[in-house]
Image (cartoon, rainbow, N blue to C red; front, side):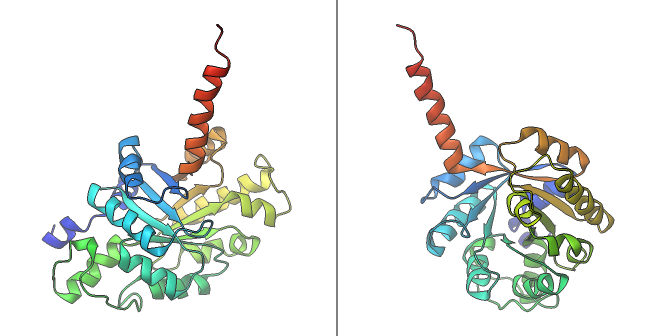
Length: 266
C-alpha cells in the first residue's frame, strides 16, 4: 500500500469489502466535534451528518467530518440537494462520501458521479491539499485515483421511480451503495408507516439482488425503531444499517433515567 493510500482510508469501505455489516449513526442534533469521538467510543463504523433535515451549517458539518477522519470513523454527509454547491463543498471540506436523496434514474445517478469523482471517472474539480490526506502534496494522478477509491457515493432509493430503475441505478459506475429510505418509499407507495407490508420487503429483495449482481451494497434507512426488520433485511443481504439519530438516542436515554426515578418506590 502506498503512503497516500495508507493515510487515505475509508474504514466503512474496508468493512464492506470484508463482508461485514456497517453500523451508522445519524448526526442531527450535535453542533460540535465531540460527537465524532462519542460515535467512535460507542462502536459505530461511520456517521453521517444530515444536512437534508436540519439547519447545521456546512462549516459545522465539515468540522465534525474532519474530527471523524482523524479518529478512524468514516464521515458521510447527506446533502439537501444533489448540486455542486453542497456536494463539492462538503467533500472538499472533510466528508469521505455523500448520501444523495431522491435519485430516480441512472441518468441522475451518473450526473452525481460527475460531481463526486475526479477524472477520468467524473469531473470533480481539484481543490488543492485536503484534510483527507493531512494537507500533504502528492502527484495529482495518484491523488485523484486514491480519492476516487476512498470516496463513497451512496444514493438513496426512496421513490417508486427509483425502485423501478434500481438495477440501472446501482449498476452505474461510481455508485457504491443504495440506501433505502423506508419512510419516504412507503409514503410513495401509499403504505405510509406500514413497515411490515410485503411491498417494502419486496423492495429490499429486489434492491439487494440488483446490488449483489454488480458487487455493490444496500443500506437500511428509516427503520431505527424496528430491530426485527433491520435484522431480517441484514440476513437477506443488506450491509449498512442506519441505526438512528443522536437526538433520538439522547431522548431515549434521558427518558429511561427519568422513568427510573419517577417509578422508584420510597
